[in-house]
Image (cartoon, rainbow, N blue to C red; front, side, top):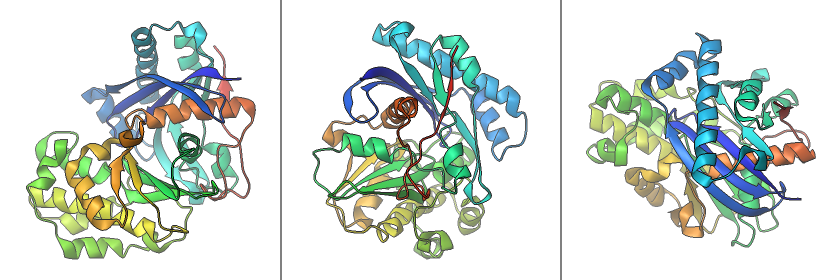
Amino acid sequence: MHMLALGLMSGTSLDGIDAALVETNGETVRATGAALTIAYDDDLRNGLRSVLGGTGPVAEVEQRLTQAHAQAVQRLLGQAGIDAERVGVIGFHGHTILHRPEQRRTWQIGDRALLARLTGIRVVGDFRSDDVAAGGQGAPLVPIYHAALAQGLAAPLAVLNLGGVGNVTWIGEDGVLLAFDTGPGNALIDDWALTHSGRPLDEGGALAGAGRVDEAAVDHFARHDYFAAIPPKSLDRDDFQALAASLVAGKGAADGAATLTAFTARAVAEAARHFPAPVSRWLVCGGGRHNPVLMRMLAAQLAAPVAPVETVGWDGDALEAQAFAFLAVRSLRGLPLTFPGTTGVPQPLTGGRVTVF
């Protein structure tokens, strides 16, 4: 039976909260509904930065983050004219502050019990822990939702999500999935922009578009061992920070932004080498698709057409939030969330924890 579910996603790009409604049974999507994005205020964004890595005032930031998510739920339901009683479940991803699957550790902050009390809706969260405990990478989680949406589209197909970290889902003609993190998405670019322009992102690729790419630095970056590693594989937001900083040290704002943007595009090109078969096209979601410089670099590097997911009728800003609504319903039904081809878990595995108000 299909139910109305609400998904919440707080991405590693530190931009804000995405919230979306989906009517689903966890296998098919009957309809997608209202969605919104609420940007973090500077205090919350700085608070989240202060606890990355799992240190600092985690409990305080977690409470503020959860309250912000509750406000997002209330605002979305008000916008849609829907009473909370109609929503069967909230899929609450929380915010990743540490991801070390090789140590069987992953940490998403967000208080499920508090969110359930504030909204009056049962909450499913903690989607990654069971996968990591079983030896999986714990990421990416969205591929099974990509596959549900992609039914009827020509395959093989790649769905590329460019959040703080980039990840890709390869969908084969027979529905087989391969998914993994490609490398940095927007995180390096966003951090550079904040430092050099005072803005939390390179709006419209303006900085990168005014700069020159250091091709030697890009080639050096592409020699990182991660790109040769066989997927599934996943990353922490800050895994490339030290390398990137060394490669752009001393550059001006524009040249540094251009080179970091080229790092992201090159990482995607390296990822494509691991596909079982070439894809017919790339569909791009996440904040990175709004960066025209990055999209041009991707088009130049990849051997198939590159387009935002809106070209097939998907909402690229809401896609990850929709996915956590979908995953919450799958969790309630005991359906698998992760698979050997998506996270490297030994066998299809369900996950998530349910909290009622």
